[in-house]
Amino acid sequence: MESLTDGFAEYQELVGRALENDGRTGGKQAALTDYRKATDLLQGQCPDVGDAMVLRG
Image (tube, rainbow, N blue to C red; front, side, top):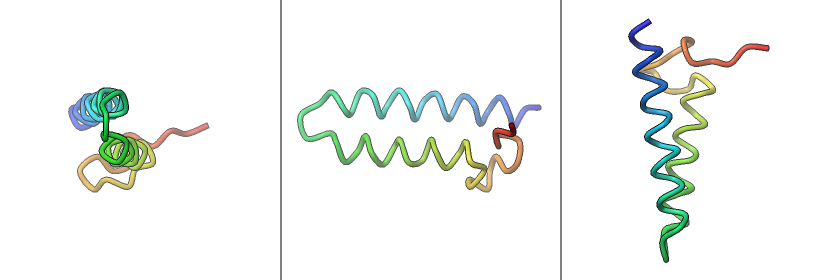
């Protein structure tokens, strides 16, 4: 359970940074990088989180 909450906290941080960077002049590339990391985390591609963060329907 701890890895799930850690992973969700990391996801929230990445999304927050992406939004902040997107609003800054010249920050589009950094925003895209953070967004991709957040997306990878949700898709379970980050080895630290694994299957705990994979959304299942």
